[in-house]
Amino acid sequence: MNTFHSYALPEEIRSKDYALATYYIRLPKDVDVIKKAETMAVGQTIGTWVPVPGITDEMRANHCGRVVTILDAPPAELDPQIEDDVRTYFIQIAYPTANFGPQFPQMLTTLLGNDASTSAQVKLVDLQLPDCFLAAFRGPKFGPEGLRALTGTASGPLLLNMIKPCTGITPEAGARIFYDTALGGPDFIKDDELLGNPDFCPVAERVKKYNEAARAAFEKTGKEVIYIPNVTDRADRMTDTVKRALDAGAKAVMMCFSTVGYSLFRAVSDSVPVPVMGHYAASGAMNEGIQSGLSSHLSVGKFARMAGSDMVMMNTPYGGYPLTRMQYFKTMHQLTLPCGPLKPAMPICGGGVHPGLVPQFVKDFGTDIVLAAGGAVQGHPMGAAAGIRAMRTASEASVAGISLEEAAKESPELAAALQRFGHPALR
Image (cartoon, rainbow, N blue to C red):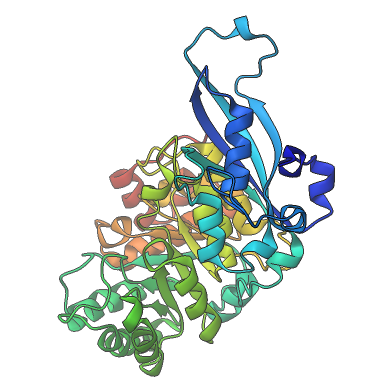
């Protein structure tokens, strides 16, 4: 076999329909990384670990993966410069999109199949897709503009609360918490990701009860709060669960894309007439390994957006989870920057969020974000409604360039929140 079929320069790849994947790999210093990359490019496309009959030149030209770039990490030109027994590299491989088409299951099988043919323990750290491929994905239907129209909040960050306790509550108990929280005027109240469709608190019953609570709160505040039920369920029950939620009056739905799978998430998103929220729960199992899995800016950012998330709950470096600032920014960029024909998704900053952190989020990414506070709302010393008002005051002050200390002089709710939860310095 002519091994040149397994290689290409970036200039050639850019003009064709290839998915360009970048991997991080660690190898013993005596392992030939060039051969390893070539084996992966062939093994994940047309071949296997030994030559087999039936592979034609046309097949090689149209369906074989191509090694595009191999980079030493750190860069090295001479062997003696590195004394360690292990070498680390970044490998770029281009896969013809015709091999798998615009779908998640076969794309991910190609990118991370990692079978005996490849014998490569790698982490997918970047992926570039052609516009013609992205065009087959519907992506977000509403995006920031649609979400603002739905909530009536034309400017500033949107506010979201997730009901606490997380689970173990009845629809009636949850509705009481919903009502108390809605009096503060958030834009959204959602289920915690741990509450799905259990017998003790069915989704359809929650939608009915929580919407009643939303209407009661509206009568007092004039602010309509949108309830987002978690419809994450078994694959064979998802369609029915979603239908029951919509029939009961749901104006948005939430799913955990890592647990239901991007393909099922996409199918539901494409079929419903309401905004879809994507939650990152369980994505750490795919992201946190150094030598396997894929980076969070892909799993939580690019793939969630492609699958149709109008807004995406993501983690931040500020709430106790040791996420790097780089991955935080890269995920935000994957959700919001121009990406072919896809609308932007609205990032939801979650995980330990409280009023003292609001200036940091506004500084980082401006106002087209959703601020998600759970414990800081239900755990506010003055009650859940006060917790929402503290978040709103912090948001408005941050947008206006007013310090939280100054804003707290006119807001006892914000003052109590800063006293209870703190006010970290900006980074």
